[in-house]
Image 1 (cartoon, rainbow over the protein chains, first blue to last red):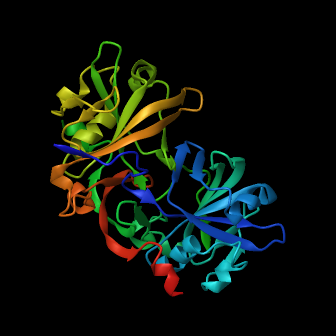
Image 2 (image 1 turned 60 degrees about the vertical axis):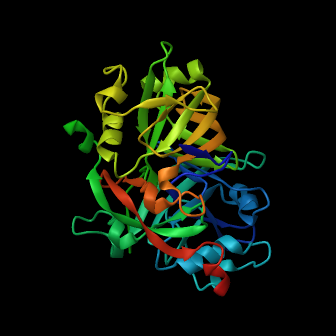
Image 3 (image 1 turned 90 degrees about the vertical axis):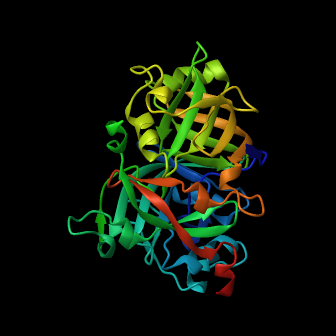
Length: 185
Length: 185
């Protein structure tokens, strides 16, 4: 027997994405979003409600960054999600995080978050809340790379958002190889 | 120092979504997708390339379901991702899974996958690969509910896709309360 929960925005897992922009004065801002993901080979999309300070920044920058929230800086990332840049003009400093300009786009990286996607703005529609970015580059700090120079999720320690319980979850271990497990059937 | 990886469709975590549809003959089909997520309060979107059999089914059904791939049925879900419905007309039977009509939309649920989102088709654009669904209902089998009747992620055991290593990962434990951890800063 299945139980119905009605129309809920629930998927597992949902990411915890930290969206970085500059405002018109050149000040870095960052916010959190769990509604979004890769939308094709070269694009990602995120829902950003129009009342967010970031929403006004997309056109200013023509770009944005998407950093993965991590276990290590989870309280700081949560702070970015609960406090609006409209109320606290320098959220990053207020929670002890640091911004540095991304090398490939006009938007800030968060120094403490070691993996980020640099995006060129494709479109932002305040009515639908849909932000679309062309992926220009993925960058990762050397501290989270493995011996082969690849991103190591066990060093990155990204988190996910549990929409049912409003908690953050760690990433678990490897349970199978993709595109191989099913070939044994 | 950060290392650049170029334009890659990489986020952590990415979901493993099993998209259920009926074809014109009424046969259930299912495929896997890691590019997608909640796109606003009432919608989700997934990238489905036009060559998939499912792509022709969206207009037939006017609906689709999105089930969470689970650790328990991971080989079967991976099979749904590696074998095309164009080559194997009854993929579900071929890997031992069972379909049952979803109660609220004209699309199949996979009996073995205990959590699913029932969606009404909003749009499918084969050029951009973008499939958009209005969330009509979330349903979950009683076997994955906790004592309060809520979905328990530790019983669901959803997986995520690691795009760098092409592996599947388990969901880890709770590491913080969302919208609370950051208020202590």
